Length: 350
Image (cartoon, rainbow, N blue to C red; front, side, top):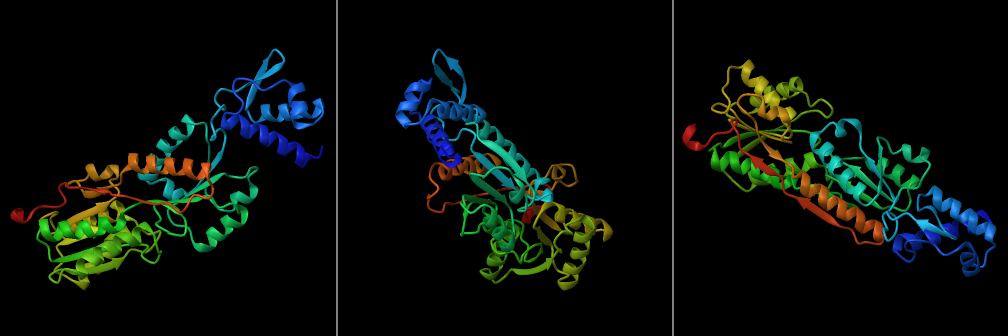
């Protein structure tokens, strides 16, 4: 029997174990030999391969005992790769989602692998069954990924690219709601936005910008001024500089929506530098609900992404595409929650 035929038989029996056709024990070597019309030596080789895959774990009399974790479990030891760069992984939201996802994967014995570059697919010694791409990757990166991973079970997290399955926070809604709160609840009419990465179509930062712009365009009394914080420079210092530019463009700005909490800190730095009071002179809303939002004074009003719901939807979507590679494209959005703290104040307090 050729190696291809041998592996085909091993995979056929493995599928039978995972689908529940074989339970508790496999038939004897003699019966398997007769059923598949192969010699006993070939069956022994197949059983050795099944042990390597952890599908069988011992013998009971003349029969081989099936690993109970694998029996009837179509997800057993399937390989899911998470593709994310290191800066993305440092974001608390993604770290928390991955922790929950890892726990869920463990409950059905899915294997979890973390890659930081599409090039790693060329070097890995296995074929992934599903790939989760976190945040933005360029079209050229995605082409590299598809070249090494042609089967294409790809899910994007927080990148609403309709060419793929995705689970994403509703950034457009958040941008719209941020401006609505600053305008309607706080009474601001001149509002600034410190945006970033607005050139990335479908990207989460781009959607926050689009939502804010949509509110301003549909409310005549609102003047929205936007300054871009350069990509990879979303630091307090760079954001403070962007805030300087924002105020030069419109000195009447009294409310600011920052694309992320780190950028919001730049507004605080600007306020200290120019003796402005937060929230009475400048109201601030951020995004991400990072830990430092509760340690600065006043605490930063910000959006919190829904970790439990995001992780749950993502896990169910992974199982769906593993069960059926032809699953029609699934697009899920999760609403973030605006947390009101001390960096914003109502009309009556201004």
